[in-house]
Length: 92
Picture 1 (spheres, helix red, strand yellow):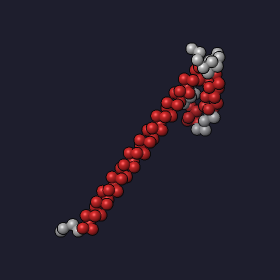
Picture 2: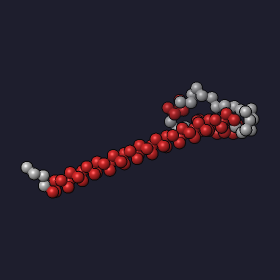
Picture 3: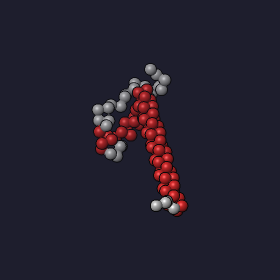
Picture 4: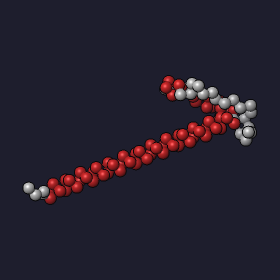
């Protein structure tokens, strides 16, 4: 039995729709990865700054204490915020 023009069009439509959904999924995945990368970079930069600046260390400590999820706070249970002697950002 030969495929009708309508059936061929419906098949092409379904294939195009599947390709579009795959593209949307890839873009969403790319955006999530970029968002995660940005968070990791900023978190590392903040932790590095906290080692050199007492104001940043105090802010980081407050942020950790105010995390709303218990499991998030537990991730920092064994981590102590650095206590620099001065707040000079350029100090070694």
